Image (cartoon, rainbow, N blue to C red; front, side, top):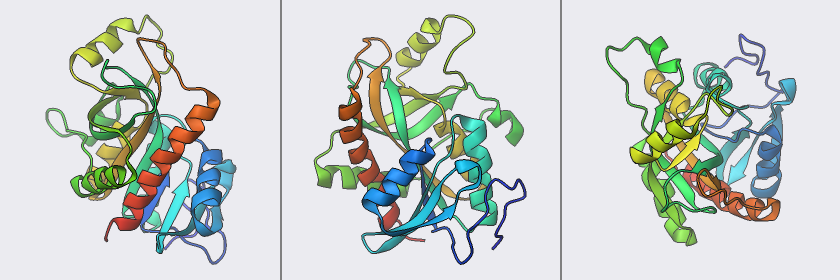
Length: 245
């Protein structure tokens, strides 16, 4: 196992390692919060560029958590290195998303079964046609069961992964098309994670909290976000701990 990645973006602290499954919120401070709130005996394993990563235990199983940054390029950089150089077998994205459909509401937890995208990452795979970006079914099933056990409302379906938070032109038409084609929510990382895992023979899942609604303007307050995000984090942690490798 390498102690430092080729990009020098990950450097393991002496005597530390990553678990087989890593939770990846976008914000490294959220990674710190997850580790300190939910993990037993969390140990800081990486802090290069302040992209904090920790390894600890949850439900008696080893789990790691690390920030991914925002967008497909950042997640794919860290995800590639975790998969290829640090023995990681599965990554669970846990983050926020904007609802598109009328039957998806703030506070809902979305399990992304698949992800459409406008990102350029699929072109690098060089597969004729279009490669489907899909979750690992076993992890998806485990997450759905964990949510039911917790009494948490979930929506399962496709999301739309966009390279743009701010579109150069009016985004309304794009959002309308994504809604009309059945996408539950809009976010910025899932398709990249799913395609990366597929190309490397690894496993991946995206568990998302609806923090706002693209069309109604409804949004959670800071306090409400914290409560809802905790539900998402626990679903992701239970999935990580219950996934066998």
